[in-house]
Image (cartoon, rainbow, N blue to C red; front, side):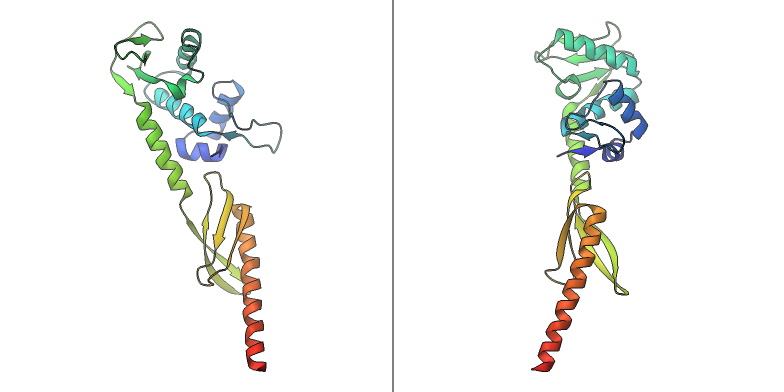
Length: 210
């Protein structure tokens, strides 16, 4: 599943400007699709989403972005097996420094060489929370569309970045359509409703003629 910048901002409570800055400064870059000019879209993976969430959690606990960068550089140099430390390791912080729990749970690395262990950034809980947010975004949404002066309730289901949308009109069984984005799906269901109404009118005319 992929996530665009708008969806990332909604899930994590980050500003689009902040996400853009982290990309441009190579802090956390989108691994699916990078911005390639005006109008292009960044697409992040779920692993990217975890990295961004861990970074935001550390910042919320008082760790500066500069310290996080320093800790990541230390980990990449001393733990090369962790390709993406923010999504693979468990971090601990006291608001001053960043600790990492290694596979040997008795060994805790102080990535900034100072401080005292107080708080924990539990990666498992972060992943669980993010999965819940993603599921919530995938739930169905209800809209109303106007066709020939009448309003029809429609139900739309889409992925987390509002792509590959499937839509139906419950009051007209079997009347459904789809689109690449929400706006297109809403236009497509209008066409489907019109076609269904025309078919029903034609069927009524045939029955009357018989």
